[in-house]
Image 1 (cartoon, rainbow, N blue to C red):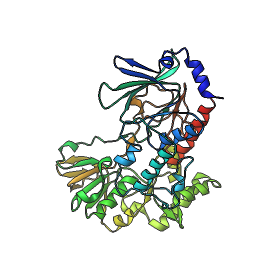
Image 2 (cartoon, rainbow, N blue to C red):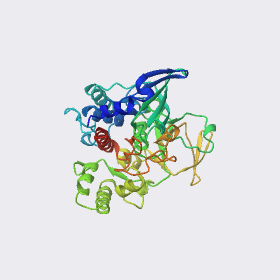
Image 3 (spheres, rainbow, N blue to C red):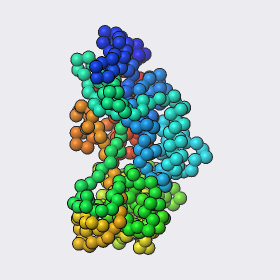
Image 4 (cartoon, one colour):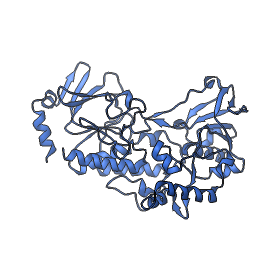
Length: 410
C-alpha cells in the first residue's frame, strides 16, 4: 500500500495538511507527511534509515547540535564498544572490515556519521521536544519543540511518533547527605574525559558498573589513587572466554541451553579466570548474570583489567556511602577516608515522562515501555519506542526494523 497516498487522503481536509507550515503567534506549525523521530542517536538513525529504505520519509528532531550526542559529548576518551562489532552494527550497513573487534569511541562515531550520509539523513538540530500529545479531534500527534531562542517554537503535526531518546537521556545524580559540603570537585561521568586532570589525587568513584570500573582503571593509568564505592552486588565477567567474546558465547549457548545452565557455565569459567570476586569486596548477586539481566535489566560488568588492579591494591574497594563530609567520605561500615574528588558513575535514565503526554505505552515512573523486549516497540495511535530494550544496539536494530515494517504496512 502506498502509505503516502493514504495520508494525503486523510489529510486533505485537515487544516495542517493544507497549510503545510502555518505561522502562529507563539511560533509556527508544520505538517510532517511521515513519522517524527525524537532523538538522533543510534536508535533514531537506525529507524530513519529503515524507513527510508522502504520509501517512507521521516523527520528527526535532536536537542543537541550533533548526532549521537551521548557518544560525542558525554563519554570518556578511552571508551570502546563493550561488545564485538557484529553485535553493535546498525541495520543495512556493517562496520568497515578494517575496524577492530571492539571499535573505539571515535571509530563508532565515524561509523554513525558515515551511516547518516549513506542514507541521506538530515536531523533538525538544536531543537528540544518539550511536549508530545495525541490530538483525538484531528487524529494526529502534536509535537512541540523549542529552538535555541525562546521564540523559536515549532509544533510538528504527524501521524506517527517514534520515541528514540533511549534509556540514557539524562544523568542520574544521587542525593547523598553532605555532598554539597564536600569542598572538592564532584562530577558525573558524563563530564569525565580522562584521568589527566586527577593525576596524583585521591579519587572516589561512586558506582561499579562498566563505566565505574573503567573510569577507575583510567584514573590509575593517569597516576591517580582511585577507590570504588560499591553499594550493591555485581557480576564481573571476563570480556572474553576461551578466545571468544563472553557475549557471543552466551548468545550461542542460549540457542541450545536454558538460561540457568548458561549462567552456571559463565560463573564457573569466571571463577577460574578471575577468582572469587567476593574476596575483593565485589559480592555476586544470587541470580546469575543472564537471568538478572532478563529480570532487572542490570548488565554484568565485562572486566577490562580493573580486577587485577583491585587485587594488587592499586584500586581500593569500599562499601556504600553513609555521608559525605568536607574532603572526606564516611562509609556504611564506619570507615572514614579522605578524598580530593568524587566521580559519580551512577548512570542515566529516560526523560520520556517529562515531555510525552501518554501513559499507556510508557511508564510515568521510569520512562520505559510497560511491555518488555521484544514487545515494547509499539504503542497506540501510531506511537513507537526504539532504544528502550535493555539489549543495547542489537535490541535497537531489531526494534527499528520492526517499526519500519509496521509503518510501511499502515
